[in-house]
Amino acid sequence: FPSHDRFGLGVGENVIWTYRWHLMESIKRIRTYYPMVHIIAPAFIVNDSMRRWFEVCKDVFRMCDSLAVHVYEHESFDPTFAGPKTEQLKQIHDLYLPLCSEINKPLAMTEFGINSPTRSKREKYEEYITFAKSLPSVYAGVNYYHINVKQDIDPQYHIPVEDVSMFM
Image (cartoon, rainbow, N blue to C red):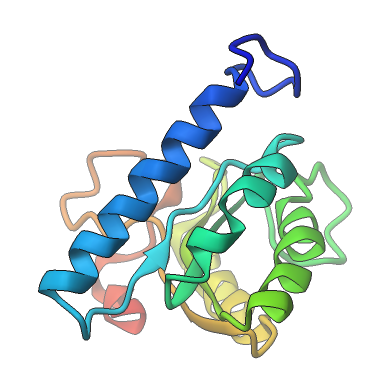
């Protein structure tokens, strides 16, 4: 496989195939020793290269129980919000929903968050609940990024500590 950046991925095609092989071998090993464990396929960064990674890895994703996605917004997940948007949720749904249907796997939103240092923790908490409840039924679960009781890492994502049990 060529090692140049033919697909605009920032990496060569051989990196995708190497990733696929390591993922497949890891899943086989996990299934050998822990046959009942629920395996979530790793999420990819939302960019133009996602389609190619899926083309190459789709058969390995069939070996998993669900597919991970990560969704972040600048200020709000509310679709009526007029400010800047990442459009990550739309991009993910455009790509993942047909794939999930094709391979009959649910999604698992293993990370989501609002990257705004100006919104209060309470506002984010309430919006996270609304957002999680608004997701289509193809989602097997959601996990807010990230539960850090000390709140010393990435503070812009945090919700009030007393409310994290809603996400557990």
